[in-house]
Length: 374
Image (cartoon, rainbow, N blue to C red; front, side, top):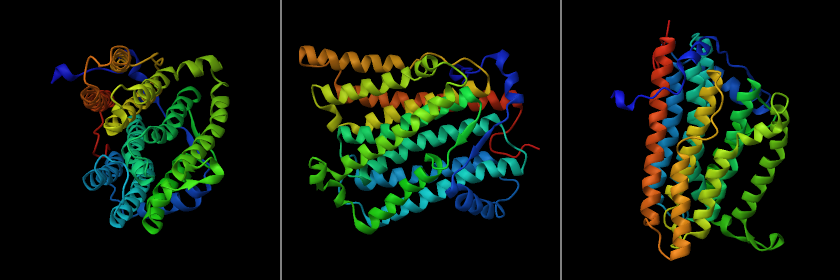
């Protein structure tokens, strides 16, 4: 088992874990007047011996259940008629996840069990949920196995990654009056309910006023502009602490990952994206999730961010394989097989990261992960 151990935090930086204190505010009206009061009411029924990390894990399990149900009912098509019961189940479990996501922090403060590990797991699980629930959302919007599906996952992913850097550089997580954590997450959950009521067929209808584009394409374009509108404000906060050039430099890794997958989808000699989009979404989602986790870990341990993660070599292989196939007609490695292997490695690498971060921080702080620490 020791062969699997890897210390992400340098020994000399472990001391910063003991002094770390989370700082953040949420100005969302929805959160402050609806979500938070409801979570406070639910908190009365949560036993004091329930660890905050247990609540965080339960939230993730809710989304995993949705994901498994979608996979067995809808398969890999990412389109088609979705049963009403599945949409309503996903909506309910999504809202339960949101409540767990609000409860864990409240339980941590209530039991005096706040820790850097809890913050890291919370951020990391939230980033995983973008990928896991994202595939369900792709099906809900009838994107199919197309570039549209990949773009839909990218729209919320990059802002989440950038906001993680905002917390790293500013040492605070201050969410504006309308934000993705509250309004955005409720919006995603509500769309499952809306589709249960009105059906999913309208997403593929064309809109003459928008160059005859499908409704789902127009929706993704609108999502993109809403997200793009808020990003300059995030970078403005970051540049109070570091130069813009440094802030942008730290985004290169995930930008490269996205461009490689974009290139593979567009220029694959065998049109691999139309056959293995799920693998592509897993690769992108879990790579991003680990990258967010690394930013959080380096934040709490006061370490300099790395220029890239070792997973970048996997993407260099993907890129080379596609270019080779363009030049010579056939790829060195069958594209579907390579994507499946890369997806599996990406998931295992993420599990390896979670295991080692949990091990190292719990040992350094002498805390139990899923028990109350008195």
